[in-house]
Length: 344
Image 1 (cartoon, rainbow, N blue to C red):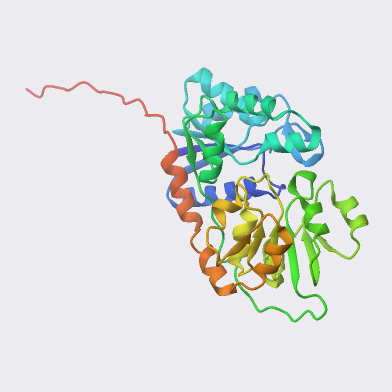
Image 2 (image 1 turned 180 degrees about the horizontal axis):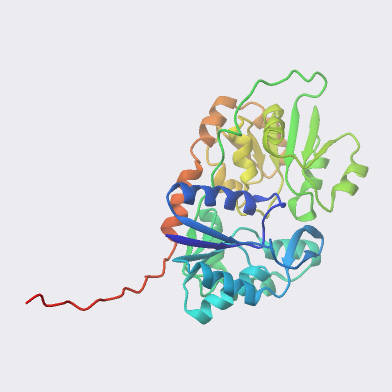
């Protein structure tokens, strides 16, 4: 099958959307599918307000349409609701191509946290964007139910996975004077709840991996916290491996791939009992969910790291990719019927 994926989020961004797409493309190719990506690469772009690492394509309509027609896909998937996703949606509707979409991010909650845009306004626009989709793919049953309550139709669950080869348990260093180490990994922005993590009354040391608009203020206000900036690959895995507990303060994530990455390294999770953690951390041997995040973090210290790792192994990317394929709605190819010749 020829699969075209359109995404406004791509390298050099490091976020859940990009990680998901990278593994999905690799999985599709392993299954024998022909995959083509339309990303900001090759377009004139502008940095997104307050998210300068996000490149927004300028007037991409004609080029997006050309790329779709040149590739002539069997299935089209729109991963994001940005300029490229909007342009691809418009062309698919005009040309009669079915497509699927994804709900990776709680944009209404993010926009409300940053600029106080009413939730109803954002949800109305997004409901309209996703309405023609053959299937709106989201990360968890809780998010599916939430979208259904908001008036979205044809919402399906597309679970995510973890690279259990990269994110794996390893020898843990003594780090005298630092333990227990409580770790946060993710974007440093108001909607992620990082300030709550920074303010928790916990023993030991807090580590923060990631970058974002709140980093400068957080570093000034919390000089005892270790800030590592953006880490990738083995360096990121090492941070997870050395931490005693991974603390996830966000109340706005749809899934939280970092939860799986931490657990795959054997590091238990402490989080609020909200969408995302409720559907990912479904075993009390893997993490603790509590409105009191400090209490959750202290309780998670007692969990067995081998059991945490075994729980994360339930989320292979191969299974997630097959689930993605099952939700695609490929366009039937027109068959050319040749006349039957009489041999007599």
